[in-house]
Image 1: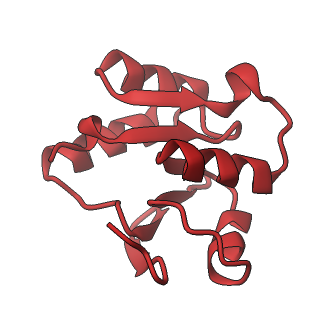
Image 2: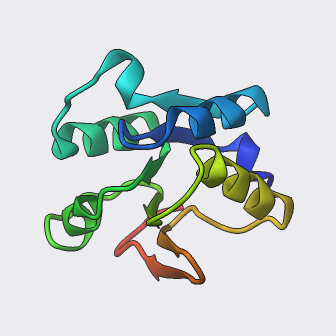
Length: 125
């Protein structure tokens, strides 16, 4: 299944130009900053879980919510990029979509030269 066929939730710290690029590519994506600016991380995670959306974030606290606090989203993509153009995370996701990278059931950490994944405990596909 193409990644664009999944449902996505961009945290307010996810660059708006990257969000716009994905939306224009036909992805079912919402951006927390549009209607819900300033929500606590727990509320953002609840939104991702309720709406069954993969969370896109630059905030490592979401990993704590999954591994220590028991939240069970369908997936989280955590970007740890220091220097990037605002559209870069969106372009990277489009490239990964083209090779059918799997995000459901995982927390995926995206760094400059490395991507790694950890399964979400007790994830139900």
